[in-house]
Length: 345
Image (cartoon, rainbow, N blue to C red; front, side, top):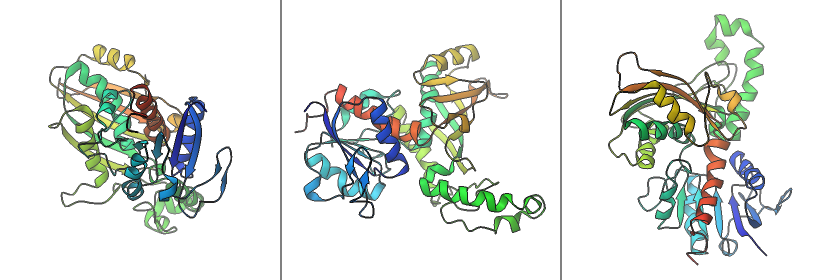
């Protein structure tokens, strides 16, 4: 049987389902794809892939690749077991991203880092970091990045299917009372109970996303700093992050003010952005129009009004596809192309 034996862990989740579709449409050389999920889903039939398997010691051996999108605790518990069974693991959780022995890779930005997978694990960055990295890398190569202020407008889908479902349920309830939305927002907000997002999200924006740390920043915001530094190889990069949840189903947007080592020439900047792989320059990209697209879109590119070394731009991408599933599959392709798959057996 030609091709690779692949495990997809978290196959029934929002990203896992897109991952399966992405493997298929990119014609990944798979002899067999085995779906794994929680005990609640195990035993069900997944159309085209057979019976969903539970994670157990006797089932994790004999894979060439294991693609994880099942949360950090599952990755911590099972990734190394798949590696011990012969697989290269590509993990989409936060579990391994900052491990010095695990490369954190965006396929268009630092593909060579895959070679440093000393533990047999390659990490996929946070979906917000992913969207930012393509234009930032293009501009860094041209001008030398020194700092960035990044304000993200993150979709409900960043919290998975449950985040989408909560927003979808809230919209008709609040939308039925426009008078309250206009004249008594507090009453409108309390018509529903938020359990996934930090507050009512429909017809609203919520400026708290993630777990608040002692420094006043959330873990989502710190990921923007720490992961950007690791991916770009800039340990001293200055990052000022703010993460906001917005009432968009899928598609993260980030406004970035990037500061460089030398003065920015706008024409040169636009040329660099247009030449970068999988990056599309538009006048005013929106997250809704990016949903379901592989590309990252960047626009509103303009020199800063106060600092000739700074550039402002707006970047959007599908957080489930572009920011998660696609890069996971591309990293699996890199692992095959660069000889990692099979090398640990």
